[in-house]
Image 1 (cartoon, one colour):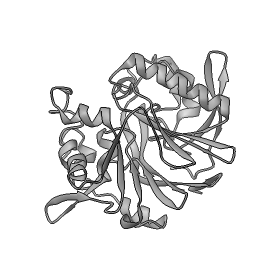
Image 2 (spheres, rainbow, N blue to C red):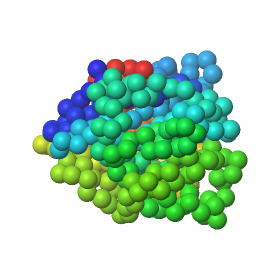
Image 3 (cartoon, rainbow, N blue to C red):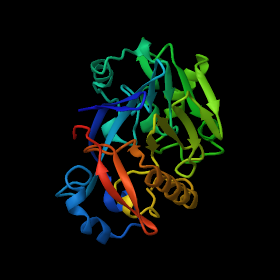
Length: 299
Protein backbone atom coordinates (compact mmCIF):
# COMPACT_ATOMS: atom_id res chain seq x y z
CA UNK A 1 0.00 0.00 0.00
CA UNK A 2 1.53 3.30 -1.08
CA UNK A 3 -1.54 5.55 -1.04
CA UNK A 4 -3.64 7.08 1.73
CA UNK A 5 -6.74 9.28 1.73
CA UNK A 6 -6.67 12.28 4.08
CA UNK A 7 -9.95 14.13 3.80
CA UNK A 8 -10.10 15.39 0.21
CA UNK A 9 -6.38 14.78 -0.39
CA UNK A 10 -4.73 11.62 -1.72
CA UNK A 11 -1.15 10.97 -0.55
CA UNK A 12 1.07 8.64 -2.58
CA UNK A 13 4.63 7.62 -1.74
CA UNK A 14 6.97 7.61 -4.75
CA UNK A 15 10.42 6.11 -4.26
CA UNK A 16 13.62 7.18 -5.93
CA UNK A 17 16.01 4.96 -3.91
CA UNK A 18 16.71 3.77 -0.40
CA UNK A 19 19.60 2.26 1.51
CA UNK A 20 22.61 3.14 3.68
CA UNK A 21 23.62 6.77 4.15
CA UNK A 22 26.03 7.75 6.94
CA UNK A 23 27.27 6.06 10.12
CA UNK A 24 24.99 6.87 13.03
CA UNK A 25 27.67 8.67 15.01
CA UNK A 26 28.43 10.90 12.03
CA UNK A 27 24.81 11.61 11.09
CA UNK A 28 23.77 12.72 14.60
CA UNK A 29 27.16 13.52 16.15
CA UNK A 30 25.93 14.67 19.57
CA UNK A 31 23.50 11.79 20.17
CA UNK A 32 24.99 9.29 22.65
CA UNK A 33 25.80 5.87 21.26
CA UNK A 34 23.68 4.39 24.05
CA UNK A 35 20.54 5.88 22.46
CA UNK A 36 21.13 3.94 19.26
CA UNK A 37 21.86 0.78 21.20
CA UNK A 38 18.83 1.06 23.48
CA UNK A 39 16.49 1.45 20.49
CA UNK A 40 18.00 -1.08 18.08
CA UNK A 41 14.91 -3.28 18.10
CA UNK A 42 12.85 -0.34 16.83
CA UNK A 43 15.45 0.90 14.33
CA UNK A 44 16.84 -2.28 12.73
CA UNK A 45 16.58 -2.98 9.81
CA UNK A 46 14.45 -0.15 8.40
CA UNK A 47 16.32 2.78 9.95
CA UNK A 48 19.68 1.37 11.01
CA UNK A 49 21.94 -1.31 9.57
CA UNK A 50 22.16 -4.42 11.69
CA UNK A 51 25.88 -5.03 11.16
CA UNK A 52 27.35 -1.64 10.31
CA UNK A 53 25.41 0.91 12.41
CA UNK A 54 24.72 2.99 9.29
CA UNK A 55 21.54 5.05 9.11
CA UNK A 56 19.16 3.77 6.45
CA UNK A 57 17.46 6.53 4.46
CA UNK A 58 15.00 6.88 1.61
CA UNK A 59 14.97 9.40 -1.21
CA UNK A 60 11.32 9.86 -2.12
CA UNK A 61 8.57 12.23 -3.16
CA UNK A 62 5.22 12.72 -1.51
CA UNK A 63 2.70 12.97 -4.35
CA UNK A 64 -0.51 14.79 -3.43
CA UNK A 65 -3.74 15.21 -5.36
CA UNK A 66 -5.63 18.15 -3.93
CA UNK A 67 -8.42 20.29 -5.38
CA UNK A 68 -7.84 18.88 -8.84
CA UNK A 69 -4.11 19.56 -8.89
CA UNK A 70 -1.11 17.25 -8.82
CA UNK A 71 1.51 18.31 -6.27
CA UNK A 72 4.99 16.91 -5.63
CA UNK A 73 6.79 17.51 -2.33
CA UNK A 74 10.58 17.25 -2.87
CA UNK A 75 12.22 15.68 -5.89
CA UNK A 76 15.12 13.59 -4.64
CA UNK A 77 18.64 13.37 -6.04
CA UNK A 78 18.02 13.26 -9.80
CA UNK A 79 19.76 11.46 -12.65
CA UNK A 80 22.96 12.26 -14.54
CA UNK A 81 24.18 14.92 -12.11
CA UNK A 82 27.75 15.51 -11.04
CA UNK A 83 27.86 14.85 -7.30
CA UNK A 84 31.54 14.22 -6.55
CA UNK A 85 31.05 14.38 -2.77
CA UNK A 86 28.58 11.45 -2.72
CA UNK A 87 29.67 8.56 -4.90
CA UNK A 88 26.29 6.81 -4.75
CA UNK A 89 24.58 9.91 -6.20
CA UNK A 90 27.18 10.81 -8.80
CA UNK A 91 25.62 10.46 -12.28
CA UNK A 92 22.81 8.43 -10.75
CA UNK A 93 20.55 6.30 -12.93
CA UNK A 94 17.30 5.65 -11.08
CA UNK A 95 13.78 4.67 -12.15
CA UNK A 96 12.16 7.68 -10.52
CA UNK A 97 10.13 8.84 -13.53
CA UNK A 98 8.97 5.27 -14.13
CA UNK A 99 7.88 5.04 -10.48
CA UNK A 100 6.03 8.33 -10.85
CA UNK A 101 4.33 7.00 -13.97
CA UNK A 102 3.31 3.88 -12.04
CA UNK A 103 1.51 6.24 -9.67
CA UNK A 104 -0.38 7.63 -12.68
CA UNK A 105 1.62 10.82 -13.18
CA UNK A 106 3.64 11.94 -16.20
CA UNK A 107 5.94 14.98 -15.99
CA UNK A 108 3.50 17.19 -17.90
CA UNK A 109 0.72 16.31 -15.44
CA UNK A 110 2.41 17.99 -12.48
CA UNK A 111 0.92 21.35 -11.49
CA UNK A 112 3.06 22.24 -8.48
CA UNK A 113 6.49 21.22 -7.18
CA UNK A 114 7.35 22.08 -3.58
CA UNK A 115 10.99 22.05 -2.52
CA UNK A 116 10.86 22.06 1.27
CA UNK A 117 14.44 23.32 1.14
CA UNK A 118 17.17 23.46 -1.47
CA UNK A 119 19.57 20.71 -0.43
CA UNK A 120 20.91 18.33 -3.07
CA UNK A 121 18.54 15.46 -2.21
CA UNK A 122 15.37 17.56 -2.38
CA UNK A 123 15.73 19.27 -5.76
CA UNK A 124 17.39 16.75 -8.07
CA UNK A 125 14.45 15.91 -10.28
CA UNK A 126 13.58 19.59 -10.66
CA UNK A 127 15.50 19.21 -13.91
CA UNK A 128 16.64 16.52 -16.31
CA UNK A 129 19.31 16.37 -18.97
CA UNK A 130 18.03 16.84 -22.53
CA UNK A 131 20.51 17.21 -25.42
CA UNK A 132 23.24 18.26 -23.04
CA UNK A 133 21.18 20.94 -21.24
CA UNK A 134 19.33 20.96 -17.92
CA UNK A 135 15.64 21.63 -18.47
CA UNK A 136 12.68 21.60 -16.06
CA UNK A 137 11.43 18.04 -15.64
CA UNK A 138 7.88 19.26 -15.07
CA UNK A 139 7.20 21.74 -17.87
CA UNK A 140 3.76 22.86 -16.71
CA UNK A 141 4.53 23.17 -13.00
CA UNK A 142 5.13 26.10 -10.73
CA UNK A 143 8.07 25.38 -8.43
CA UNK A 144 7.64 26.79 -4.92
CA UNK A 145 11.02 27.51 -3.33
CA UNK A 146 11.74 29.23 0.00
CA UNK A 147 13.24 32.64 -0.68
CA UNK A 148 15.72 32.37 2.21
CA UNK A 149 17.25 29.19 0.78
CA UNK A 150 17.29 30.55 -2.76
CA UNK A 151 19.33 33.53 -1.62
CA UNK A 152 21.52 31.40 0.65
CA UNK A 153 22.54 29.01 -2.12
CA UNK A 154 22.65 31.68 -4.83
CA UNK A 155 25.41 33.69 -3.22
CA UNK A 156 28.62 31.82 -2.27
CA UNK A 157 29.31 34.64 0.18
CA UNK A 158 26.32 33.39 2.16
CA UNK A 159 27.34 29.72 1.97
CA UNK A 160 31.05 29.00 2.02
CA UNK A 161 30.39 25.25 2.19
CA UNK A 162 29.15 24.92 -1.38
CA UNK A 163 32.49 24.27 -3.10
CA UNK A 164 33.58 20.74 -2.38
CA UNK A 165 30.51 19.96 -0.30
CA UNK A 166 27.48 17.77 -0.93
CA UNK A 167 25.60 20.69 -2.51
CA UNK A 168 28.25 21.50 -5.09
CA UNK A 169 26.72 22.09 -8.56
CA UNK A 170 23.17 21.92 -7.20
CA UNK A 171 22.19 25.51 -7.86
CA UNK A 172 23.55 25.43 -11.40
CA UNK A 173 21.91 22.18 -12.49
CA UNK A 174 18.74 21.90 -10.41
CA UNK A 175 17.61 25.39 -9.40
CA UNK A 176 18.89 28.04 -11.83
CA UNK A 177 17.46 26.35 -14.97
CA UNK A 178 13.97 26.31 -13.47
CA UNK A 179 14.32 29.93 -12.42
CA UNK A 180 15.52 30.89 -15.88
CA UNK A 181 12.46 29.18 -17.36
CA UNK A 182 10.21 31.46 -15.29
CA UNK A 183 8.71 28.59 -13.31
CA UNK A 184 9.96 29.49 -9.81
CA UNK A 185 7.79 31.22 -7.23
CA UNK A 186 9.71 32.35 -4.16
CA UNK A 187 7.87 32.65 -0.86
CA UNK A 188 8.65 33.49 2.75
CA UNK A 189 6.90 33.26 6.11
CA UNK A 190 3.91 31.17 5.08
CA UNK A 191 2.12 30.39 1.85
CA UNK A 192 -1.39 29.07 1.28
CA UNK A 193 -1.42 26.47 -1.49
CA UNK A 194 -5.13 25.68 -1.48
CA UNK A 195 -7.95 24.97 0.98
CA UNK A 196 -6.18 21.84 2.21
CA UNK A 197 -2.48 22.70 2.11
CA UNK A 198 -0.19 25.43 3.33
CA UNK A 199 3.55 25.99 3.63
CA UNK A 200 5.05 27.16 6.92
CA UNK A 201 8.52 28.32 7.86
CA UNK A 202 10.51 25.67 9.75
CA UNK A 203 13.98 27.21 9.63
CA UNK A 204 16.97 25.66 11.33
CA UNK A 205 18.08 22.81 9.11
CA UNK A 206 18.59 25.50 6.46
CA UNK A 207 17.58 29.18 6.59
CA UNK A 208 14.53 28.48 4.42
CA UNK A 209 13.52 24.99 5.54
CA UNK A 210 9.75 24.62 5.40
CA UNK A 211 7.03 22.09 6.08
CA UNK A 212 3.70 21.42 4.40
CA UNK A 213 0.64 21.23 6.65
CA UNK A 214 -2.41 19.31 5.44
CA UNK A 215 -5.79 19.88 7.10
CA UNK A 216 -8.84 18.43 5.35
CA UNK A 217 -12.17 17.26 6.79
CA UNK A 218 -10.66 16.79 10.24
CA UNK A 219 -7.60 14.87 8.99
CA UNK A 220 -4.15 16.36 9.48
CA UNK A 221 -0.68 15.58 8.20
CA UNK A 222 2.73 17.19 8.52
CA UNK A 223 5.16 16.80 5.63
CA UNK A 224 8.23 17.40 7.75
CA UNK A 225 11.05 17.49 5.20
CA UNK A 226 14.38 17.32 7.04
CA UNK A 227 13.09 18.40 10.43
CA UNK A 228 13.55 14.68 11.21
CA UNK A 229 16.08 12.24 9.74
CA UNK A 230 15.60 9.26 12.04
CA UNK A 231 12.87 8.06 14.41
CA UNK A 232 15.33 8.58 17.26
CA UNK A 233 14.76 12.32 16.88
CA UNK A 234 11.18 11.78 18.01
CA UNK A 235 12.46 10.25 21.24
CA UNK A 236 15.42 12.67 21.43
CA UNK A 237 14.22 15.88 19.75
CA UNK A 238 17.11 18.04 20.95
CA UNK A 239 19.62 16.23 18.75
CA UNK A 240 20.30 17.50 15.22
CA UNK A 241 21.76 15.99 12.10
CA UNK A 242 25.23 17.04 11.03
CA UNK A 243 23.62 19.01 8.18
CA UNK A 244 21.64 21.47 10.33
CA UNK A 245 22.86 25.02 9.69
CA UNK A 246 21.37 26.57 12.86
CA UNK A 247 21.36 23.93 15.62
CA UNK A 248 19.49 26.01 18.20
CA UNK A 249 16.70 26.94 15.82
CA UNK A 250 16.52 23.40 14.41
CA UNK A 251 15.89 21.98 17.90
CA UNK A 252 13.19 24.54 18.65
CA UNK A 253 11.49 23.91 15.30
CA UNK A 254 11.52 20.14 15.81
CA UNK A 255 9.96 20.40 19.26
CA UNK A 256 7.31 22.84 18.06
CA UNK A 257 6.25 20.70 15.13
CA UNK A 258 6.27 17.42 17.06
CA UNK A 259 4.11 19.14 19.68
CA UNK A 260 1.63 20.22 17.01
CA UNK A 261 1.53 16.74 15.53
CA UNK A 262 0.95 15.14 18.93
CA UNK A 263 -1.76 17.65 19.90
CA UNK A 264 -3.65 17.29 16.61
CA UNK A 265 -3.08 13.58 15.95
CA UNK A 266 -1.37 14.48 12.66
CA UNK A 267 0.49 11.93 10.57
CA UNK A 268 4.16 12.96 10.31
CA UNK A 269 5.77 12.28 6.92
CA UNK A 270 9.51 13.07 6.95
CA UNK A 271 11.42 13.23 3.70
CA UNK A 272 13.82 10.35 4.33
CA UNK A 273 12.25 7.71 6.55
CA UNK A 274 12.57 4.25 5.10
CA UNK A 275 10.42 1.37 6.36
CA UNK A 276 6.80 2.49 6.68
CA UNK A 277 7.87 6.07 5.96
CA UNK A 278 5.50 7.97 8.25
CA UNK A 279 4.26 7.88 11.82
CA UNK A 280 1.99 9.31 14.50
CA UNK A 281 3.54 10.70 17.67
CA UNK A 282 2.34 11.28 21.22
CA UNK A 283 3.57 13.54 24.00
CA UNK A 284 5.40 11.88 26.89
CA UNK A 285 5.91 14.59 29.46
CA UNK A 286 8.41 16.96 27.91
CA UNK A 287 9.38 14.39 25.30
CA UNK A 288 7.64 12.41 22.56
CA UNK A 289 7.07 8.81 21.61
CA UNK A 290 6.04 6.91 18.50
CA UNK A 291 2.38 5.97 18.65
CA UNK A 292 1.76 4.27 15.31
CA UNK A 293 3.45 3.70 11.98
CA UNK A 294 1.60 4.51 8.76
CA UNK A 295 0.22 1.60 6.71
CA UNK A 296 2.52 2.31 3.77
CA UNK A 297 4.29 -0.76 2.40
CA UNK A 298 7.81 -1.01 3.85
CA UNK A 299 10.98 -0.55 1.87
